[in-house]
Length: 329
Image (tube, rainbow, N blue to C red):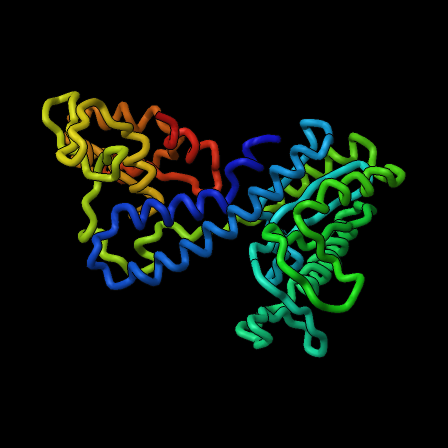
């Protein structure tokens, strides 16, 4: 499994919102709404991670291609969004993770999923089985238009073992049934050669469209001036520079050198896709020459200003290697 599985768009979306809540003032009016959205985001990602863990332990070769959070263009204005895609020689499997507990009832005409408590319907949701079938049909069409004749199967996977009522033969399974589902899938005759698998994996990777909501301050209309930018301690408090190379935390009394990469990642994900040498110098209280060297070591695109002035360094949000480099200690 590669980095594509471990830290894809879903991971970075959760991470960025986590950082926003970490630096956002307590009095920010949008905080309550953002915290609720983040709880839902964390729950969704936790369910998807549980599905991936089971797939990784299903006895398949360790290099089996698994994609996490896949968006593919079906037409200029229509996209297919799938939680998890697994490419096997036996065909392609897609899985939609659902982290919903309790008693659930599938109904038809129109298709919907109801949450039932004490005999009463307390919540009505879009039907995940109908969504999955639409995704499967759309992905089959996407493959065919690119010359791949591979069957597409899969299922909605409930990761919380709810009690389910509804018509039979729906494409739904529990997490504990997932390994058996995989074992059954690999008993079919292979339809793709190893070369076909590699070609399909490359085609999916090159075609993926990634959700880019950054910088988050602009997305939510948050004034960056209300946030204290710069290095932060592991406890979450802002670090204060005490000497040229030493920072301290007034909260937990930490003293040492912070991760400049983490602070730059906050800047890019939350405030701006670009930074200047002057801004970097002010962010860390370092000389311009030191800021220039620091930015030069990062995986950033240098954009020269007119006459060599106001040079910008830009992050590519789709370059996960660039984001990972900043995340490293």
